Length: 161
Image 1: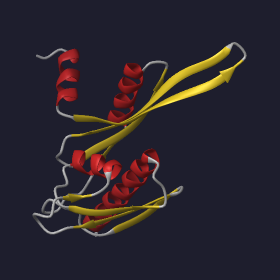
Image 2: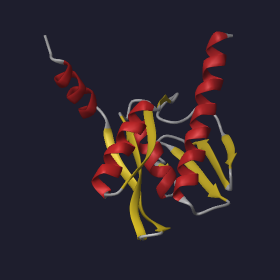
Image 3: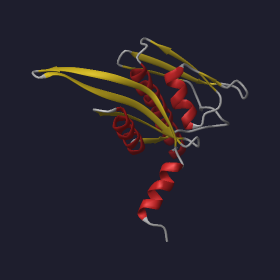
Image 4: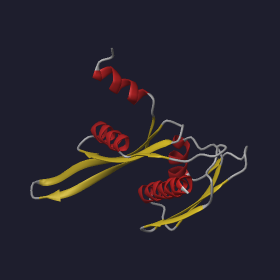
C-alpha cells in the first residue's frame, strides 16, 4: 500500500508544468518599498486536463509553488476530438478576446505564446487561434481557459441530449 505522500508525488509527476510569466510587483509603504513576485503557471497531463494558477509571494520559488498548487486545484477537462477541438469558440474576458477554431490534422498549434502554453498542456495537437484586444498574457490565458470551459460545457450538454 502506498503512503499518502507517495500518492501525492505520483499525482504531481503525471502533470507537465510550465511557468508562463513572472512579474515583479512593488508596493510603496511607510517604511519603504515592499517587493513581491507573481507567477502565472499552467499544468496539464496532455490527455485533456489543464489548469491555470497565479501565485503571489515575496520570492519567486514560493510564487511558482503557489501557482502550481492553485493550478492543480482548478483543473478543467477539455473535449478533444481527433487531436483538435470540436467547434469554433470566440470569447471576451475583460480586454482580452480569444478565438479558437479546429484545424485539420498535421497543421499543428497555430497560437501565440499565452494561448499556446494552455492548449499544448491540454493535449490539443491541431488548433488555430487568434488573440485580439490585449497583449497581457494573464488576461489571454484566462480568456483561453474560459473558451475551453465553454467547449466543455457545450460538449457535456450535447452528451446529455
